[in-house]
Amino acid sequence: MLMKYFLLTLCLCTAMLTSAQNAGTINGKITDAEEGNTPLLFAKVTVKETGKTIATDENGVFKIENIENGTYTLVCSFTGYETQEIKTDVISGKLNNINLSLVAGTLSLDDLALAFTSSASKDETIKNN
Image 1 (cartoon, rainbow, N blue to C red):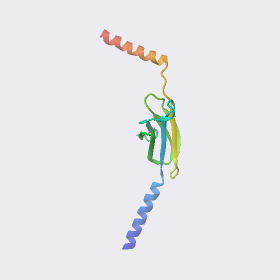
Image 2 (cartoon, rainbow, N blue to C red):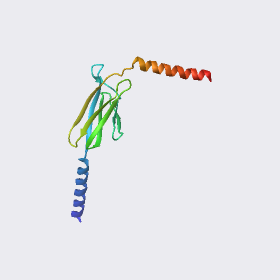
Image 3 (spheres, rainbow, N blue to C red):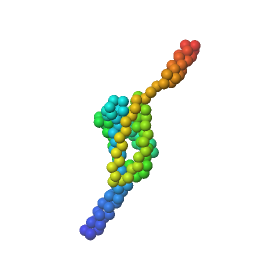
Image 4 (cartoon, rainbow, N blue to C red):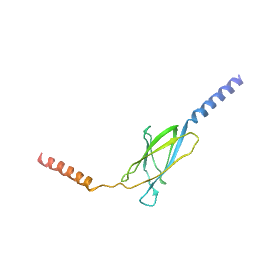
């Protein structure tokens, strides 16, 4: 009877260890390229293929755990900065560390003029009604 419990426990432990080996972790840090690579607090990091999203901490660091082995695209964004995508391979047991610097976004004069024109035409439509 004791042998049955021992074998059952051994099988369960083996199954848990085997399933845990198929998942990996992505670590990283997002910084501000404009300000001497200072950390970007609460930048958003999304795994495109799974939709899993996480925010960076006060040091600009993020950690995404329990990611199945494979190739993934990380989408890194922060308000006022250009969004960047980076591909990474997740392999269980291997440290996957991503360091990325985001650049402040730019708004061209054409974009600004288009936004102003669009806003002005909406205001004109409201006044005429």
